Image (cartoon, rainbow, N blue to C red):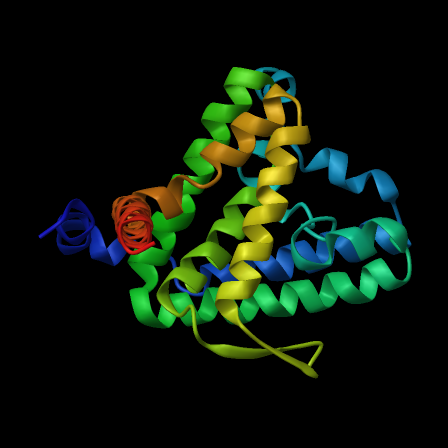
Length: 229
């Protein structure tokens, strides 16, 4: 029995029902306010060390309601067409995360979903106090990584038209994560790494073992090819 199982047996009643639904509905509401009423509304939600230390402790939670519309699958298009197409694709992005989050919740249960998100939030808090700020994008992106890890060969339809396997979306998202990490400043790097705390806690060992096995397989194939030339 691993540590997550032990926690669930002891504190399983502390899981928050419909957690992902609540968070994404909040993001949708915040996005609508930003698009149509007040562009600066997001600044009232952001996680900032300065503001938190000045008593604005609500930011420790409200940063999760910052719209993640400028990241993820539709990031480039959102940057180009923020007000119109960005809004439409942002809603599609939210629907996608609704689907992923609810699928994970059905498999894990409320406690594990709550723990997964809480670890990401804790990572964001640590990142914030180390660097001055943190965002929610990596936390939600970690849900996609978890879904892809569990069901890599599941077929889905992009825009309801283009079929592809989840593992390809996972690799694409990982590439975006890597680009953001390489090109971002120190605060961005810390936020991206610590935001994946939930995924790393749940599946980090499995991912590490998979990487080790992949390297060993590659070496065996290379050695075999060298011997048979």
